[in-house]
Image (cartoon, rainbow, N blue to C red):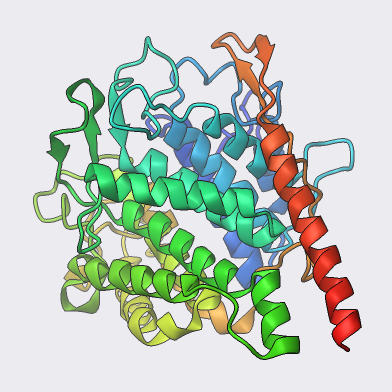
Length: 426
């Protein structure tokens, strides 16, 4: 997977993959390497991973580098943000103190995208593209909103800040209300906002299911661990929490059940394109993200283990059989259902096979951390709260951080009140 990378060579650009791979996939590639270190402890590739992750942050430390912003979409930025979020959760080594930190980078992506939430059509949602001059600006796609939901839910879990959870709820509700997801939890590709999202592209992709599955798992875990719920359980022994965790458990179960469409014979398949041999260079990597999110879901919501782990196991075994091609004898193929190498190869195929195989090591690693359970990545709730032009110029400050900051303050006050009440009861 690393062999074709030239970003660490003379004349190369750190964080860029060679043509024909787009910038977003380089961020996803970094995410796979962060997972690789997490599951194996092998730090061989940490230097090039950290170099790539920091080189592409852009002048405002929000993954809006000037060399990419003219073509960058919300989903592109989101994949870099999710990689930074994984680094924070998995205690990937922190950058130098003078560099932007992983948690702050994820917060910057969230904040910059929250500013783009668009209510001029379809009742809300993120557009696919950021700037009006890009093809696709009038498309509201599921993956852009899914990445935003995913990051919001994971930030809620990591920081304990209710504001992130509220954004996650808002995004989830909008996706289902507008029809990007069906009542039985099938996620579609997107919709045209010039038609007020009244028509849909009904293609289903693995990565859409993955980002929503993991976001739902984090929301399930977050609601189950709210300070008020813990206080009531530990001191008053009364259920003063709402049934939010059951709501998210039901939602998560629905997502997993609907994901069965991607597992013919129990083996993961990109069903929209593999059978017709039409998977493009992007789609050839999509299975990596579902595999990664399945493993993280098991950790965040252990009740899902019986549903998800068999799929991970059979898919990993099948992927290993596909990694038997090429001149080196270990080049991986696209279709894992064939029982052998199918002659299709590339960085995306290597990413997918590596991710599904290492995901089976989930029982050998500690779970993801939070600010309260050993997290080491410094955050910045105001990161990314400026509007950036395509040229990278800062046009004007926009202080949505006030609301996020207020969420932190509210949480601190609640903890203080609950702590005092606990002391009085004790």
